[in-house]
Image 1 (spheres, rainbow, N blue to C red):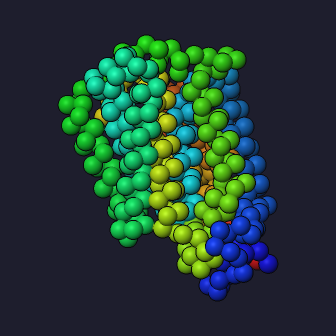
Image 2: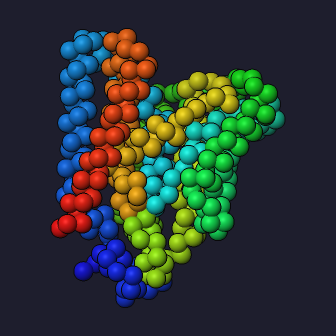
Length: 348
């Protein structure tokens, strides 16, 4: 029996050292076959959406320009959703990523930041956005782990505060990116694909490796599945929780850089309600809201599924209200299926 199985079935500490080096991979012990089935189900759903798009919009839907539109729209949300996957897998939730993204776009485009970037290098803008994102994530993590504030409340406060701070700094104005080398770099194409799409792919690969092939990933699933058992196994649960929220914040910072490349402007409205789209993509992808199981591949497919669905709606001039209703129904069905799979796993 693996250490993770012991952690989820009884509180006694298993025979492991404090580093958790001999923790067995929980991604293989918890629903491995079901995880493959969920991914295949998402692929089938995505394929059916493509068929619907072709039947209703014709060649316009499968054109290269439209495919790139879907990928560019999915890139920013995808990066933020990958960060969200780590937090939810670890048993938390982060409602602030959209507001943090908006704050990072504002801070990276202030006159002071852009002046420094023009005098030195555009990497200053990137570093500013990443620092704002990671800093907000660390604050969330400290409040949750050491302040013992419920994640929902802590990140809700950050969501409101970050959005308000962004509006205060921007004075309710939009700050245009005037550092041309920044835009030239991030809007460049590589093999015919925009750089921000490649960034999304790189973050997805890095996230998959971190969650599925490292001790950090095994600890994340252990903490999400049973925090007390993880603590008894020698895992510093509080410190690990801070790391998870820092990753989510860093992902929001990366998303801010990508948003600046796409729109060419920083705005306090950037990322508005993106946290809800990210949570929806993560849940539809198969990550348990209760924690203890996460899938990066499922999150990527969930993001692509929602963005393709949105594109089909737009191509057919369907109102945003109908889009919201359909997306809400998809989320409810996904949660119900999660509960069914979870009950089946416990029964076996």
